[in-house]
Structure formats: structure tokens, C-alpha cells
Image (cartoon, rainbow, N blue to C red; front, top):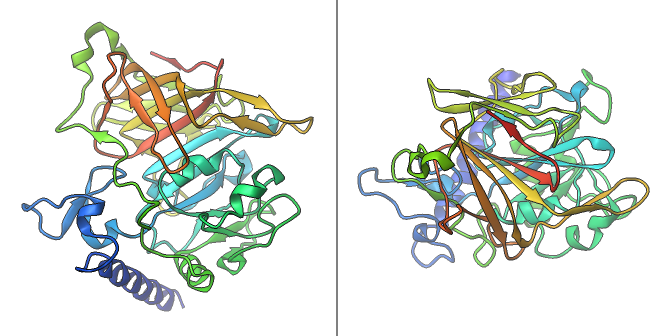
Amino acid sequence: MKRNVVKTLKKLTAVILAAAALAVLPGSSITQQTVVKADEALPGYVRSVYTNEWVPAEQAVVRPIAIMMPTDKVAQPSYGISNADILYEIMEEGEISRQMAVISNWTGLSKIGNVRSCRAYYIPEATEWDPILIHFGGVFYMKDRITAPDINNISGTNQYGVGGGAPGSGAFFRTSDRKAPHNAYTSASGIINACTGLGYSLNIREGFYNPKHFTFADGVNTLEQYGAAAATANTIDLSQIFTYTKSAFTYNPADGMYYKSIHGKAQTDGLNGQQLKFANVIVQNTKWCRLDDKGYLYFQNIDNTEDGYYFTKGKCIHVTWQKAGDYTPTVYYDDFGNEIQLNEGKTYIAIAQKGRTAVFN
């Protein structure tokens, strides 16, 4: 049975990549150059818009998924989370945070999740990447946006609060090893089938997709150019921002990566047992407020007046950030007004409640 499942997923992956390849044929609406310019030294490969790593050109035109995952202690570990190119963490009601994993190379994953509900303020972060948004329900504050025609979402239950349909709900399955709501998962095959049924494009959409996001360094950015303004940051403690998970990072100079912990332990992927690690860590201070007595929150994702921090290679600099609209990428600037240059690799972004502090040393 397992062998048949593997064969089926390989076929599905081949089908979606073949479909993606059509998007770079002459006369199509999206060209390879729209995604990223290929380097002649590596024919057939392009730089990933997410990580700047080399990826097959046909993979670069496949839409990513943005999938909601929990931070609840009893829900760990999540499956497929180490495949996230970009991992967002944002507080929700009840002083518990939630995660959104943006995964570009997802078509070979047999188990992804568990999957939890969405909040309205995740949508502007998701739309930066024109993803297929995958969640298990949501709250009524996201009603108008989640049902808008430009949003392609797959939901395991009512897509907002107690109302709305459940588009693509057949993409999910439950396991018996955990109790609900911590046992709902999806898979590449389920996502592909749901998108086919809903008429969602599996390729990036011209007019929505933005080929320019981060600016990556040409080589390695050690932040040494900032001199004394670049503080030492071998550890990053986000426990004042995420009081329940106490998310934290430890820098490993051997590979230049920040390793993530949650609830005082290594945060790992249930698929491979690997601890999550990132080349870049960003803390994005954001205006916020409580919306009601239930504690639902609002975050001002679109802004040009707030600051934060950028961590890489055991160092940290102060930054400011700007985001002009839903599909407009968030841009980060140093204190000289220059766009920061990220290092090649994955990025973690904490959308922090303004007034809560990141501690590092």
C-alpha cells in the first residue's frame, strides 16, 4: 500500500510540474523571466524568489501553499513544516500564537499539518506570495476577505466563523493518534484534487504574483558593514512576544543557521524529525488592538511607520518596514534607508505586537 501511495504522489508531482512547465512556453501568460532570470551557468534552474536557492525552472512557476499550523504544545510536532520557505508566527486570542508556513516545493508531501483555523490578519501576509491558502475554518472578522474572488482558499470547515462554505474540504483527513482539533491534515494529492475541482490555478497568477520580494546578498551578508550598530545575537528570546510558546532561536556558527525551539524544546518536523532552522530571522513590530471581549486581535499589516530587527549570522540590526497593499511585498530597510540584503535560505518572520520586546545576546 505504501509503495502505491509513493508512486501515486510521484505521478501527481510529475503532472503538476509538467503543467507548470507550460507556463514558461512562448505565448503563455507567464514567462520564465517573469519569475526570475535564469543563470546560463545552470541551464534549467533559476533562483528561488523565496530563498534565492537554485530550483528547477518548472518548480518556480508552481504556486506555493500557505498553510495554517498550530503552536499548541499537545499538537507538536507539525508535519511538513520544515519545508516552509517562509514561516510566520503571529499571536492570536488567548495568548497563543499560530503559524503560517509558506511552502513552494509541496507537491511531493504526503502529510501536511496538522491544519488549524485562520485569522484575518494572516491574509495580507499570505497574499504577498499569491498562494493557495489552506486552513481549517476561521473567524467572522475574515468573512469579506476570505470570500473575495481573488482569494483561492481550501478550508476543512466553514471558512469564517459559523458561516460560509468549506471549499475543497475533501482535501483533509483525520488521524487517530491525536484528538480533534489537533488531528486534521492534508496532502499534496488532496490539494491538487481540490484545486482542480475549484478551478484554482496551480501556477502563479499574472497580475497577482509579484516576482520581487526579498533582496538577497551577492555572497554572504555578515552585517559587518554596520560596525558597532550590528549587535551580537547568538540567542534570540521571543518569550515576551509569544508568552505561551516562548519561541526562541540559537545560532549555530558551524552552518550559519538559527535553530528554533518551542515550549523549551527543539521544534521539529514530524515527517523527518529535523529541527527547524533559518538563515534569516525577522521581528516585525506591528500596531495591534483587541477587537472584542473574546480577545480576537487586529494587526495593522499595511503600514510604513513601524520598526523591527533583522537577525543573521549571529548578528542583528535595527530595521524599519513598509507594506503598501495586500499583494505588495513587505520591504525591510536599515537605518540608512537601504533595503536589507538577506542571506540565501529560509526566513522566519515574527509579527510582534508593538510594545512587546525581543531579547537577544
